[in-house]
Amino acid sequence: MDKSKMSMETAAIHKGYDSSKHHDSLATPLYQTSTFSFATAEEGENRFAGNAEGNIYSRLGNPTVRVLEERMAEIEYGEGALAFGSGMASVSAILIYLTKANDHILCSRGIYGCTFGLLEIMEEKYGITHDLISMTTEEEIEAAIKPETVCIYVETPINPTMELVNLEAVIRVAENHGIRVVVDNTFCSPYLQNPLKLGADFVLHSATKYLNGHGDVIGGILVGKDGEEMQQIRMTIQKDVGGIMSPFDAWLLLRGLKTLHVRMDRHIENAEKVLAFLQQQPAVKKIHYPADPGHPQYELAKRQMAKGGGLISFELEGGKREAQKFMNSLSLIKIAVSLGDAETLIQHPASMTHAVVPEASRKAMGITESLLRLSVGLEAIDDIVADLAGAFEKTAAGAKLQEI
Image (cartoon, rainbow, N blue to C red; front, side, top):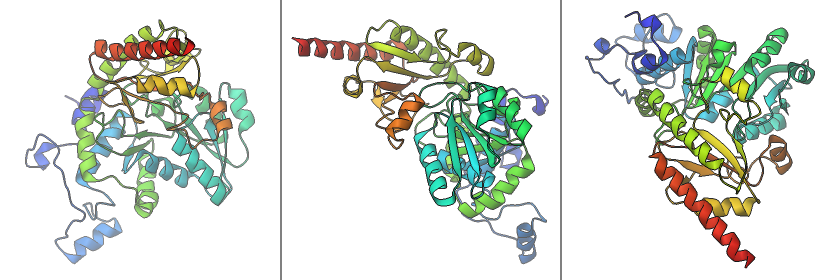
C-alpha cells in the first residue's frame, strides 16, 4: 500500500519504522544508550557539523525516540515532532522558543495548574505577561491582543471544566496579526482532534496520559507544522535546556500508541454510560462533558471533536467537604491526578491539580470547591457505575444521619 495514505490508526502502529534496518525485529528496538561511536574522527566532525547523517548523543537524538517523533508527527498532521521528559517540558520549550523578555501571551481562561505556575514564573523573572480570557468570540480575542502579543496558548477542552475554545476563530484572529497558536491537545489525543489541520502552529501533549495509556510513563510531545522550525527548536531549546525523553519511555509510548484508537473507543463508550448515570443523580448539581447535548458548546464539540472523550467533570451539591467525602467513599475508582489510564481515576482540582492557582483565579476558571474530575477507565462499565452508585448511597446515608 501507499504508506503516505495510511489512516491514523495504521500510522500509529507502523509509521517511522522499517524492520529491515533493525535486524527484522517486529517491535521497535530499545536503544538504551547515552552516546554513539564514530568510525573515524572525520565522521564525528561531519556529524557535528551537520554534513553527515547519523547519531551523536541521545540528548540530540536517539533511534527509538526518533521513531516515536516521526509517528507523532504523522498522526497529528505535522512536519516534525519532539519528545520531552514531561508534558511540562514540552510546554516550557515552546513558550521559551516563542517569547523574549517583555512579550505577552494570550491564554484560554482555564489552563493546567502547572502551566499557570510556569506563566507566573515567566512574568516574575522576565516580564513576559499573560492574560486569561474566555475566547468566546473573535471580537473578545481581538480586543485582548497587545502590540507585544506573540503567542495564543489554548487548552481545549479546558482542564478540568471541559469548556471548549473555537480553534478556527482563534486561528483566524492569530493569522490576521501574525501571532503563533499553540494548542494543548492532551484531553482529546490525535484520535479526537487535530489542531494543526485547522491551522494551529504547534500542538502539544502530556504523553503521560492517553498517548501512553498505562500509567507507567512521564513524557511530553510537541508537534509543529514546519519541519525545519522543529529541527531548530531541537538544536537550540531542547538541546540546551535538556528536557529530553529517555529511550525506554519512548519505547513504552510506542507500545501504547498501537492501541490508542482501541482504548479511546472504550474510554468514550464507558464515559457516555457514566454520563447517563450521573444525569440521574440528585446529588449532582452540574455535569461538564462536551458530547452531552446539554453542554452549552455541544454544537462546537460536534464540529471540532470526533467524539466527547473519556473525561467527565461534575459538581456535587455542597462544597469541598462533600466532594472529598464522596471520593473517600469510592473503592474501585482510585483517587489520583492523572488521566487516560486503564484505571478509572478521580481527583479534586481545587485542592489538587489546580491548588497552585489562587482562589480568585480558580473561580474565574469555573473551578468550584465541589467540582470533581473523573477519568473514565477501561474497566467493565457495570463495575464503574456500581462504585459510583455506592459512593452516592454512602454519602446520602451519611447526610441523613447527620440531619437526625
